[in-house]
Image 1 (cartoon, rainbow, N blue to C red):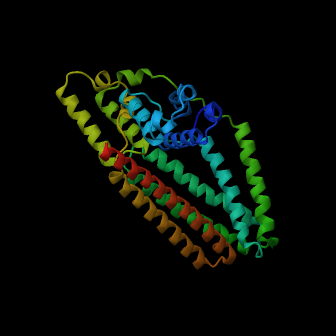
Image 2: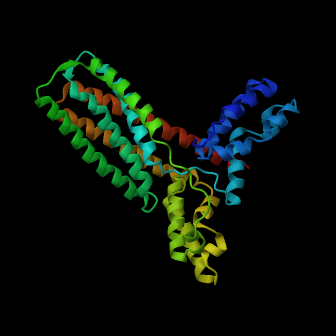
Image 3: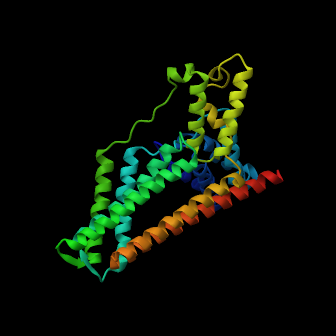
Length: 355
């Protein structure tokens, strides 16, 4: 959850007000629900205002006072969306954050490569975790930017092209360093220092490269956009949310276009800025998004499988084993994330069906 201030002080207030572990657990689960909806820290803090004070004046269980944390958080999000309040952080990571994620991922991958610690390999293999992390981070950046203006298949295809190019480049680099005479040492003697270096670079980059200031307010273009520009901005804002299906985006834009055809007023005058209007719609139910998650999981599995076969065919020995292990771990983590998201959506849908 991005923002200027963390929620540690709020958590401390929950823990201190009555000294009950259930209050802290309720808070933690509510925060996770906000994170799942990409709520920014500022509005999360506002949502919790007054909750500790109410607890201090009551002896009832927190779930009896406010309901289950997931339901409580969903209600806050629903109210924000109905009022058109932009309480949600952008899904497009700035270049600075992508660079930091790339170096941090390289540090983690370097540690994972130490599993092949007894094999003697060229020292230049220390650059391999960074190359791999650049592929992963590049996919994140491209996907987040393409999805704003293109449907999901186009975004996935863009990532697939990058993965193919990156895989070929990585395999080519692995072959090249095998051909050039250079010092060979045990894998762990290469990767442990590399992990420390990448971690240090991450810290230095974060200190020297300040984050971009968050833009607030509306521009003149937002207030005087014609209907076609407004609809284009609406589609981009809905797509970039990441929790609305492409079919639902098309339906929302079609409804707005039909309204414009029947009304004499401009869409921006009727609904306000497109970015604000886009926040009014609830996320798509899990039945619509399950296909997206399944599609993404299949693509990821295929990428891992093809990459492992390619490197194995190139015959890079211990490197291919380490690389395959790292990709397998990343695939398992991604698949676990998909399962968690699906279960959360299914739980929410069941709660809505019973209400």
